[in-house]
Image 1 (spheres, rainbow, N blue to C red):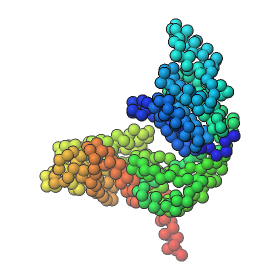
Image 2 (image 1 turned 90 degrees about the vertical axis):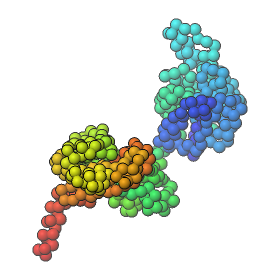
Image 3 (image 1 turned 45 degrees about the vertical axis):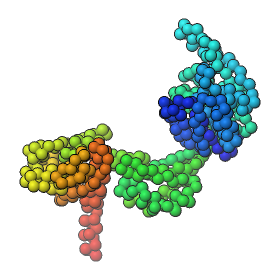
Image 4 (image 1 turned 120 degrees about the vertical axis):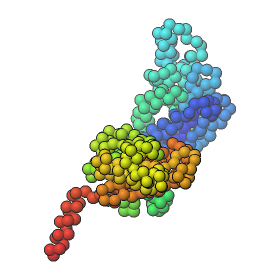
Length: 436
């Protein structure tokens, strides 16, 4: 039994080094192992060369006690994984009868003659363990050498994943390796930058042990991932609870929920909770704001509609923007954004409206440089216009503007809209205080 796992992953194949194939195996395998409580310390990618493979395997043998190798188990001459490992272990290769029978049966069903090199896929380590591969030819292999456990898997992702899930993890569990697991909880925050969040929690992050705290930047939001190593979910909750409380005491005002919650989903949730409807008027973004919202179920409960007012004619004759604003201040202006939002809110009969106007192209417009964006958020009580200067290509500016719009809406609603329950409560409380 392995007490403190130091795991290493080696991916084999020259095509990986040349970039002809993207290595998705090690990423998937790392996640599975982490969730199983196995610590991955090292990763290597090695080409199909006997000496370099032998050097990599020797290095792994000296520093790790569990080694996963993917690739190099095929039938061709450059599939060298088994031969290199056998030399390192000082053992022989022998044919696994069950595997060779399966390969022969496959060719018989295809009415084809099995070539000699296909027999290579049935080779295994003498004294080792064979993991039957039900979705491919080459089996998975296990061999223990000088207290290091070696697990060899095909490089084909579908086969590798099946073997790990159906054969390897149960094997490790049976032999007592999976005594603990990693449990994670993701806390999502909005309205605070990653650097500020990290500064607020610097001492907690510096002194972390179990659980660990990992700040992660999202698309318009930031998250913290708490990860605890525990024998059960109950134990992990007990470990994470005091750390989570410390985090909430410091930055809980920016907390929006658990998991990676996109900004548009946060907006939908807050609008549903406060029974608010919204509409949009989009020039610069060309409908991207509304499109981002309606990809989620339930968008119709908060979004009444959107007007894509790309030209001045549409702004004036469909939306109702004042011609004097367009003539004197231009379409890219605070005044135009304000009028777009207010007129759209009235036309589409919503509690809130948002408008976007700006420059995503390469040339200045109305005296403003490319990347200049005006976003207005309007309610019955007041309208707020925000000026932003964004960078990047055309579509990047549009996407950034939409993300900024979601953030502005969320903050606007939090600041200006209080639930009826709270209004009634505070009204009642004020009356009671007046009577005292």
